[in-house]
Amino acid sequence: MEYKTIDDNEIHEECGVFGVFNVKNASELTYYALHAMQHRGQEGCGIVTTDGTRLYGHRGVGMVKEIFHEQELRYCKGDFAIGHVRYSTAGGSGPNNVQPFMFNHSTGDFGLCHNGNIVNSKQIREKLEMNGSIFQSTSDTEILAHLIKKDVTKSRIEAIKEALNTLKGGFAFIVITKDKLYAMRDKNGLRPLSIGKMQDGYVISSETCAFDVIGAEFIRDVEPGEIVTFTKDGMSSTFYAKDRVNNICAMEYIYFSRPDSDICGVNVHASRKEAGRVLAQEAPVDADIVLGVPDSSLSAAVGYAEESGIPYEMGLIKNKYMGRTFIEPSQELRDKGVRMKLSPVRSIVKGKRIILIDDSIVRGTTSKKIVKMLRDMGALEVHMRIASPPMISPCFYGVDTNTYEELISAYNDVEKVREIIGCDSLAFLSHEGLKKATGISDMCMACFTGHYPTELFDSIKDANKESKF
Ligand code: AMP
Ligand code: SF4
Image (cartoon, rainbow, N blue to C red; front, side, top):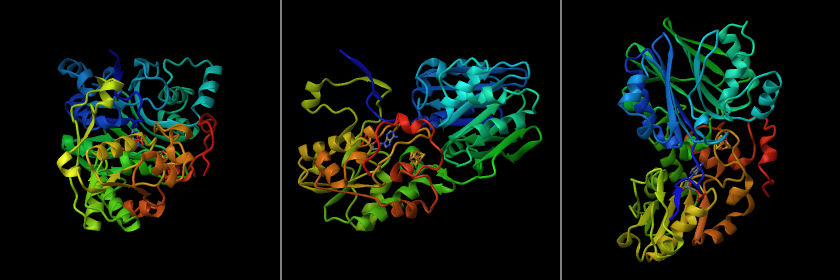
């Protein structure tokens, strides 16, 4: 018998960060917020708090509800906290790489967590090591800590500014000290970070869905290139870069974020539904029912159904109780039809011409499996409609699609992808359609266009071959 991690052969979401400034039960609030953002990373999680005298931290490999119980939350005392859910997009997956990190330093202890990816981390790390820095982990996150402490003669905010100016890529950082919290976003605004108000204090989150869960009120996003400082005197802002643009990641809308989150002021469910509508206008097809691949494609499927007038049906059911690990069915059982995650509803699917909506195709393995399942259940035709453009380039900003080889559309045109997947027809949302759906024209769409908003340093070399497009 072989035990496998469910994520073994899959691509993954990125991480989520959260912070609390001056609110009672900070560790408990962080626990609920991290739980609300569990979809952003299931590999590890942690919380660091302070009561003003010292830092307390707990972290581990596993889901939030596995790592934290009453005892750990009670240990993490104080009204300030930061927390993190992790999927390892850079660095290894061992316990040393689980965040937040805590650092003891004669000038003041601090904790740090981060979401995203630094594209010049290799160069910076080498330089720092040559100057005597010793790293505890292989994660990108530690680099910021070393950069902040490089010159202790500088004020903390000046040191953070200088450190951030050295980093290239997409990132959101939260730093905790005994009396302050700092929240910052990369100057291209690739990764989201929002601020909420709660009682006499503030909360900071990768996604606004966490605010709703804990009863905080959204006030604004951290701007690209901005450092927001929270002290007993309130909230203050400074910018570390002049050349700032808002290139929020398009995949936040397409796949990563929860439908109830607002990213840069745009609701994720609404943008997905609109993408479905635009897709129906761009790629209509005659059929009996519209199905969505649960969960991230359901909003787009509703939009497609509404716009086309073809009924939306619940033809695919997802098992909600998949844990992090499970015993994978053997090939023999899989061949016999044992399905772990998704099951078609026979009475809905049988004898129907189906429009199947998915939010994206990465490797093509999910679509291929679903098309086969639907045909096995008696579907007459399966027309796939994808609520994003073909993914032709890797992401270097904290999303686990690092090489061209893992992207089916990097090497195959739409007709070839259709043939591999085995559906009757296939169409993707256009680039313009995606912009229309979100109402944002300057998002990062590099994985669909190959035009990256930053320099890439060595990342592009490590991404193997070039796309044929
Ligand atoms: P694939 O089988 O590789 O084509 O995966 C496509 C499915 O994975 C789609 O149904 C998406 O919902 C989902 N997906 C898209 N991007 C990612 C990502 N970066 N990490 C995890 N899943 C993803
Ligand atoms: Fe998001 Fe794609 Fe840009 Fe990566 S390349 S930040 S996944 S839009």
